[in-house]
Image 1: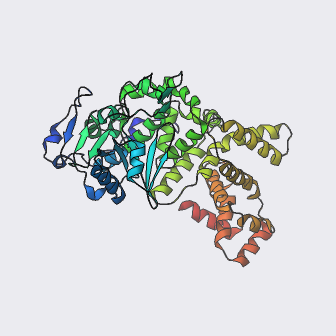
Image 2: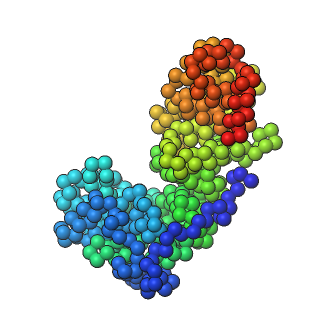
Image 3: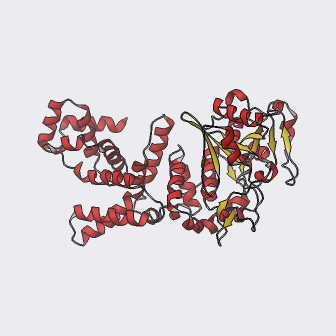
Length: 460
């Protein structure tokens, strides 16, 4: 059944053993027992090579080392290199504070209030450099927390050992040391990487309360890596989902893009629903998905996510406004149909429904105005796409959002929300010459040739 999450769906084998073959490291199976016990993997016992690391990151690591500071690659880049993946970003951790980092790199800019970070720029390539975070101290003015446990500011600096225990997941707490090319593991991250386990560092309830977005990150990483959530991390998700209501809506917009625009949207969607997290992000959409329409399950959103994942796998782009217009379409449609049943004109009913749904949605996820405007255009064009006579189709064809609106119509047709013949008409209308287009717009309906074309397209 669509919307039902199965762990089996999100489990994939680890691409590459993180240890070199036939080494002592491959025999190490138990994680460290305490924060004071670190495991060091020399270059001969792991698969990370400097040739896999970006030249910009290598420059930053060596310049920090030359200046007398510690310098490590850390986080997702180390994890991905061990798994045989190509990292999206390379992050550096050091004992140099932000001001010292800025003095070392002229091409550096300091950002952030909650976490003070340094961005070192090499053209379009940006290497993020973070100072080791220290142990939390409630009396420290650089550390501020909300009464519900959320961290509001965290500029407490410390040592490598302290920094490890401030990170979120064990597989993201592996440090690659540029001095000797070893990997330092304080949390058993190597063990969890080898076992395909996603485990939070520290008490999961406390860590989720510190930053509720970690619940979304847990789902995102589990799906992306094909890992299993450790039971201690999985259990609190249902109970703590409401904590996401306290997260700024602008931040959740950024997280939404990471969740659904990374090529694993469908599985992420199903897993979020399973743990009750999706309804916090899209409450109106979840309310629609919980019901059937004309005794059929709602497949529109699932099909759209599946298509988006396929496009990303093929190297094609996906725009946030298109996916968001899909997420909110069924709430708008349901609301508009009620208004129409009460006697409102369909055009005004859909416009009012769009206004109401967007006004309620932005309380959860802050959608930028430029995005919401494009969403409105996609929705408005659905009615105009039904007009196939005269000059109107040519005007629609010239609209900047035509292609997105057409793709939207095709998805609706595939899931029973629009006429397949109408979608086929527009498919052909784009591909024929101008003379044929004029002939098609005289009748506005599929002739026998078009019907044959529609049948052929539906089989492909």
